[in-house]
Length: 317
Image 1 (cartoon, helix red, strand yellow):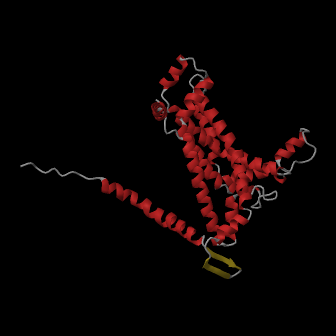
Image 2: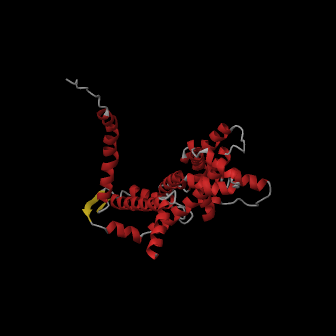
Image 3: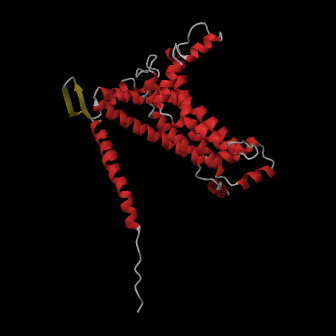
């Protein structure tokens, strides 16, 4: 008789170990998410000590938001994100390429990696307070500019639209370009050196190698960076909140969508806050979908395109 061998099944232990995550996710994320969507269809707020609702009103909250300054605040959020993201991705790509390129021979690379990553460890609130102090009318920046004779009167950086938006974008750039650089460096280091050696033998220049080899090969990491940056940009709150004292000055040109959401939460208008959260979720999903489709090549070797061309030729013949 053949002896039956008892195998040890480890699958149950895997499910057991991931069970705490799913339990905590269900309690602290999934249930609040469902409640948020549910309250978005209700009139539910407080007026003084009186609580109004919850009363089902259908899509009224969504319509009211579209009639408010929602689109203006969405445009503010987009502008602030663009100001911070474009220099972030450009500088990060340049630094990643320089650090990885063996011909550059940059010394003390580990030191520079730590230095460029350090701003990412500083809290956004601390960053905002620092810049608020530096660029105030009585701050060190104005004192230096006046002492060297570049200006005769203090510049009100936070009193102008361009000044406030530039400061917010600059802070977002400083906080995140180090993290982006480290990720892009890891992506470039994952490319086989044989590919670069073959390109050099074929006479490719540095620019050609970067645009035709490096960028296409790190496209998945670029897609991840862009998607996470879009989500973070839509959630932009702490920097403009602290820098403008929650007012989005001047004339609410730096008032973001999450600041708008926070204003509804402070007034305890849970129905409007819920509907705005749903809008943010939908917009995030749509933008991330388009970014993913644009930055991911479904035909990396060109076989699908060649097959389509062959079908067209066969039909003509």
